[in-house]
Amino acid sequence: MDDHSADDVDLSTSADIDRLRVALIRVSRRIRTQARGDFSPSQLAVLGTIINHEPLTNSEIAEREHVRASTTSKIVDTLERAGLVRRTPDPDDRRRVQISVTDDGQVYADEVRAAGRTWLARQLEALDAGDVAIIGAAVPALERLLIGEPD
Picture 1 (cartoon, one colour):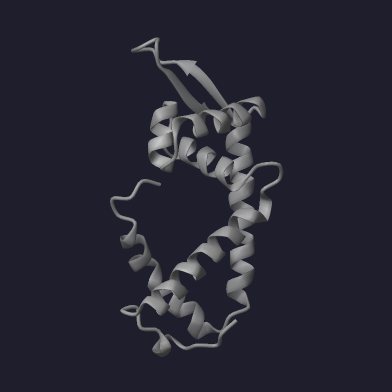
Picture 2 (cartoon, rainbow, N blue to C red):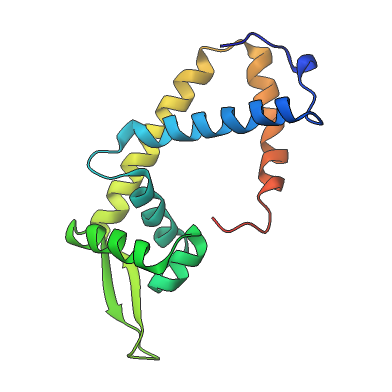
C-alpha cells in the first residue's frame, strides 16, 4: 500500500478520485465480509435495506438497490427460507406483498454489524492519532456525498 500524506491527494485529478473510490470500496467490502456466514454481500445489502425501510415491496427493494425486481425476488426468497424476512399481504392492497424483517433477521443483522464495527475499530487502533483524526474529520463530508441517495 502506498504511504501518502493528505497533502499528496488532489481530488481534482482522476487518479486521486480513483484512489478514493478504490479505498472506499475496499473498506466497505472488508467490513461486509467480517461476519458474512452463508449470505452474499447482495443478500446482506437487501436485508439491511428491508430493516432500514420496512415494510417494502419487492419492487421498492429493487429500486433502492438499483437492481431488477427479479434479482431482489430471488434474494428475498433466500432470506425468507433462512427465516430472516417474511412476506405478508399488504392490508391496503391484497395484491401487493410487503416484506419485513423477522426477529431472527434483526438478530443476525445486529451480529453482522457488530462484527464489522469490531473489525473497523481494530483497524483504526492500528493507525496513528493523526490519521484517525483525518478520517474522523472526513466523515461528515462523506455523509454529505450520500444526501439524496437511497440507502
